[in-house]
Image (cartoon, helix red, strand yellow):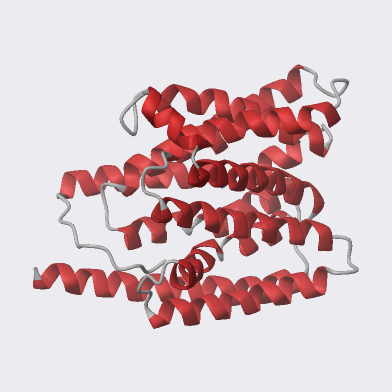
Length: 302
């Protein structure tokens, strides 16, 4: 996502730490498909308990990050922007797990990859922020890739899952934009509350019969690593490098997530996913490369 921000100078040691942290976060995010395929619970149980474990594990770093625990910080999540943030995060979490269960991991990953471009478009239309023309063009091309994936999935048994992935992507884009509308909204507390809220909403539909030691361990690991650990590592790492560099490293999730599932479970996505995914991936690589070139040019002039 290309939104004009002031250039920063990063020391080499900080930059290297940032690379490691973002890379580990990306690796943790890329394991979502593995967890989803290993779980033997139903969708409702996976949504409820993964969200609860994620909220619990994310509660720990929330006491130390973004100013730590304070009444003012946590009460701000009940302002209109904070409530909107919680609602979007809750919907996004539910759609994410539902999509992993109802369509291929590759489809979910490729559709989700368009989130930064949707966020840029929303910032441009809602906030009148200056967004580079190449970002809007890239967003349009990525949308074409999504249309290819979803259109060929309808009638093939994965259409509902693809629509859930699209719902997750749009709500996540809103999560990116909302803090720009109201910068007082703390990200971590709203993420914790959304995890607990998702659990409360979906646990009545969950089945306890399928929750053996195997699934308990998987759900706890899913919430701890893919929800909490990855989020915190990326938060720390992205602060130590230019946004374009962090975006380039994290974009490897697009390749790694379906690769792990193909390697371990032989899950082969349909041809439409290869076609639409190629469009999306090529556009992201082009856009990120241009961002990197512009960023280096700007730093060289400072």
